[in-house]
Length: 230
Image 1 (tube, rainbow, N blue to C red):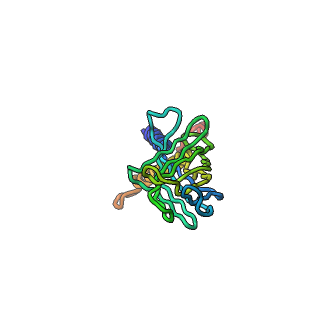
Image 2: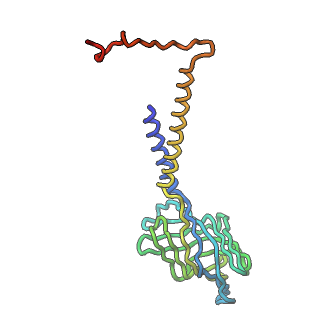
Image 3: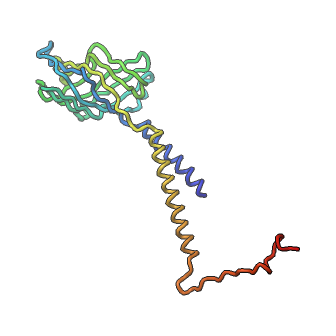
């Protein structure tokens, strides 16, 4: 019965790990060399180094069969003059798409921009799509050279152009999580054995008013055994 319980617990942990791996959020960090350039039809100022992170959450789409589609669930980019944060209003929602072949990736998000002339802004690919490394379901590296920001309403000139490479932040792997679960099960089993041993010892201890059972010692002359038989 105990082995069955342990086996069921391992299966349960494996299921949880699989769910985490399939539905987890992908978080990316911008690498050195990322830039933002203010524009209003054409560049209006110098490019500035850009840093920050963003997160994607994959969702199923029956309309697209050769790519994965992602929602941008978090975004925080900052330079010396500008600060971009995610605008979460449903009307401004824009998806990102990662294509199986060729290995191309679009970028989509609506952002509030501090330091630019208008907000909110739509962040999307310009003329060129980005590229990625890894799998379409979980890209490890995303590279974009032509991300543009423009007003979410119809028309309007670009407000800025971004260029960056982003690296996936490692998450605990399925094996790591399963290992943690196995350690927890081992600790639980050790504790149960310890408690069982203590209870067994308490049962064998003499009660306060109970006289210990005397031990019978046979003299050598009456001991039976092959060694004493003549």
